[in-house]
Image (cartoon, rainbow, N blue to C red; front, side):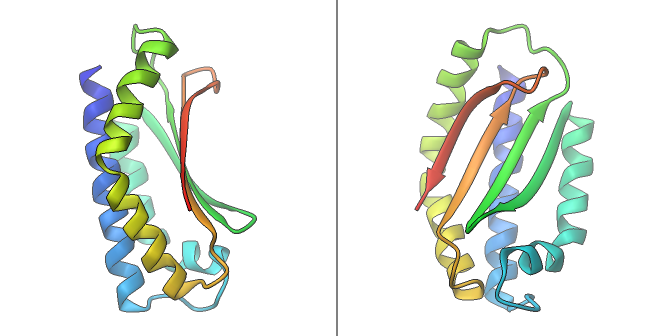
Length: 133
């Protein structure tokens, strides 16, 4: 369980980083794909950090949604229902951060409709998902 909280803390750092990059106007075009490309070097650093913590991280566009996908690469020894409860509680605590990410994102990509965070277990099954609109 402690690992999930560290992961969530790193997620918040990533979200704050995205906010700051959006405020700087580092985007080459009005699409989510171009936005992701503009922050790819920062995402690569985050991906490496998550790999060291036993997780995969992916950021992609799904329609007009910016989606963060976190997949555990090791078994945490807890069932998904227990992990869901813990992760949902932590995501609720950082809800304002993701609302802010969406607001900043919309200044860069006006067509952006939502920010989504998904957590997957080691087998790729969804543990939990939250969406900010």
